[in-house]
Length: 298
Image (cartoon, rainbow, N blue to C red):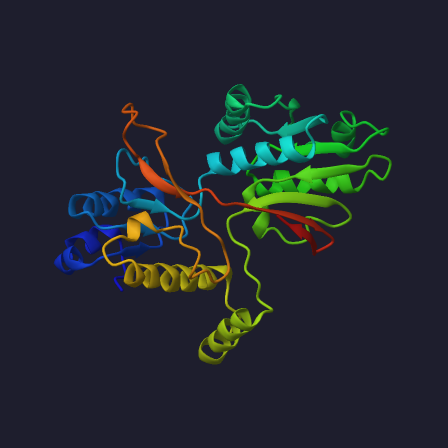
């Protein structure tokens, strides 16, 4: 285990002899030094928590477990096509570069979709929008499918609050992956969001981890504890099981703890059609919640 920034880790010559690196990055700038090192020495580098590819180009040894926003958007779009294929939808967004990216991504996904594209009307609101501005675009005669087209937490909270206050209008709010960390946002309204992680804390394994952590650190383990435990256990066990062939067996389910992983090659940057920019987990869970209760996980 090496702590500190990734530049210090790269300078540690002992890393050249390892068979697997598991990293918890804090920002995009930390990724490249270690990913370049992993590529040079042909060592699998597992990014266990940070949902950013760091602009990897032709690095088949970089493995992203927490998917990118683009993958979440593809998952949301496919979910809506499957569950509400003929519904008219409204996406509310605010002004911003990330919001532009979200809207443009939906447009790109629609163009490449083999199914009938979704009917999505996009409305831009200011940060000080009112409930009346939201309900002006809702229909009281049908269920409204409302997409939050922003990662901004306050925008998402205020949007859902506006929807929950309008008893005359039945709505389902489709959220961004950041909604997994929001508490109380689903009061009086059903929400749906995507996440690559679904930890069951009430089964034997979940309780064992919680009790062990509480006895040692006198606190409740966060999701980061579960993510770290799962990544370390699963992929080191796979490394031992598939001697010298870990990269071909990353999605092996025989050592599953909590979550399924579907690790696929992606090439968003390279112009070489035969190249792999990196590997990414494409498995998402679709969480439906209302009033703090999970209604379904698909």
